[in-house]
Image 1 (tube, rainbow, N blue to C red):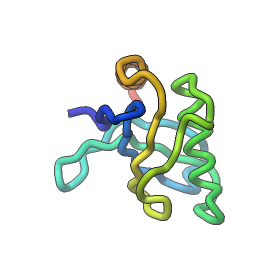
Image 2: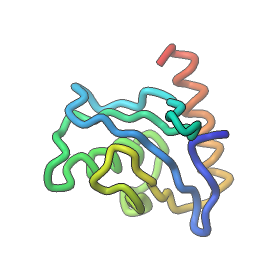
Image 3: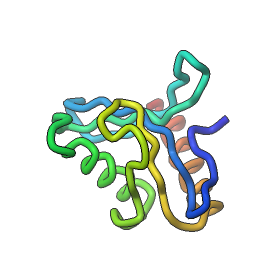
Image 4: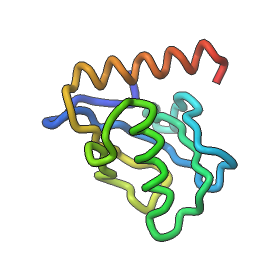
Length: 109
């Protein structure tokens, strides 16, 4: 099961964020202890004042060719595991996410 699900306005993506990760990057998919899959992200900034959330939005916007205004943290704003809403055509977004994961697998991420 992929780390996203279709939603009313697009897709909701489950992510696990590592702040102060040394670089801004998408590291692939991780299976949590409860069996849920999440997209692993790392950002350079510390989790203070919403800076890490802003970095996550910027990273996802660039990777998925979305405007930052089409991305929101809808759950887990202060937690490592977050739910991110990506607004747009759900099928297109799911396709972009699948291509992103395929590219990460090819490069051994």
